[in-house]
Image: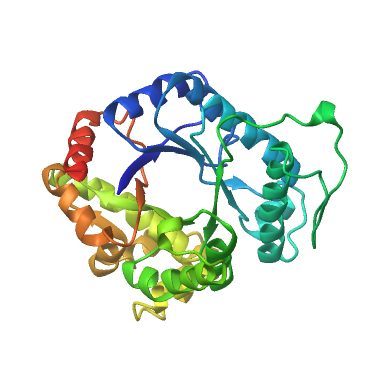
Length: 336
């Protein structure tokens, strides 16, 4: 299992943070499209590192065309000498229509078409064929040699997508190299919903799990007792926030907490985060978190995720967090 961490969006510190993460032994660095663009920090990190993998988790798909994603990822693949992973996600309707001012119709099929278009564009860059893609949502059929960058010299980036529902999970298995599972999950949800649908997609594409990566982020409660309780308070708030979203109701339902999502949704309307957090009891918290002191954290990670997840990140920044050496020892424990 690879242990990953977050790369922040500050371009002035991205290089030193990336190098520090590489020196500690982290397997990958991920950026999110939140306060900053997810692509630019990796341009800095690629030139400051040699071996750590770099990926977006996620770049919001629809505000950019497949050609823009393809060209940007191609540049980062060259700059990193083959270490870039393109992670795409749909985000929700409100963000697309009101934050980015783009269409959100048929997000699942649209994302599938985008992934296929990007692959076609990369094949064109590699000289396998001309540009002649005609999909359900995207068309790319004109390019002159002046605008074709040619082969990267390091192969094509891998593509992963963020997925929760059955369509997206199956689609990930069918046309992608991996899946980025939302941190709002339990192992029951992985076993009963994510894995079977991914397996169906892999079977449809003639592949197995050996050809695919499962990646996720988890809430971790570690350090001494005081630190764990502080982290627990933050995790309760975040779990309550995610749990208020109707799209994530199935995660609660598979654990038998069918009334929890409607209660959280109702409290969210009145912005009562304190009461929302109170609904995340210790039993609920345990299902969503890994809790252990640093010297037992590697064993706790293995107990929960070994055989299910190929690469794991944490819902918290680690580089610059003040306990980097402790995390380095966790990585050493996991590598044994």
